[in-house]
Image (cartoon, rainbow, N blue to C red):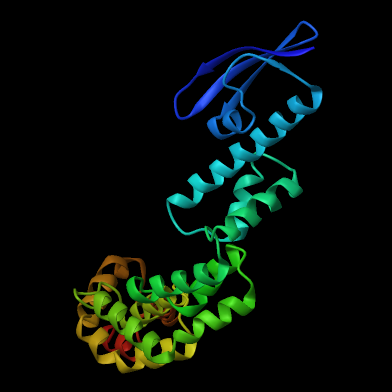
Length: 261
């Protein structure tokens, strides 16, 4: 005989119930929806089939509410929700059933998700199309959906965002030789997912802006002063070694030669 021994209200629309079966006591935490669905508002006897359905329905309800809570904070892709649910169950059938209900209720929609994600990045973030694509792939979005959404990200938008980044990078004096500064900004733009050809074109157009913020002669003089005592400039090999060292730091060969005369 299976019998509900006690029902106790907990916080957050949850209930603790004790069920006795063959003198063995099992405790369950039920959601309010499960309790109401099976009319478990008072102690009563249960058939094995009823008990099985209560446990099954409660597992579904618990995971469904977890999924709702997960997507309430921010947009989520279907793949992200599945991964989240897999932390609590390996039952693929159960997960797919929950996903179907979420889709039917329009709580998850990958087409809407990818469009809103791309629009948000276009509106607020200084990142390129490759960055967005990689992030969406990581969220389990199909390549076709990504390609369609990124049609809105044209080269004009890329130039505009890169322009803003370069302006931010050249607001203040740059304590690097031009070549190092150029490569540093280029790498930053590549890491943000912009197209290499557009990066190159933008950097060329901003060449004077970058150079204006760099006093390369002053930087080179300070660099030479720090290490000059380690080299004998009358020795051809040592002088060449110093020149190579300064070149690896991004200084121009001709400028170095002038300073070492």
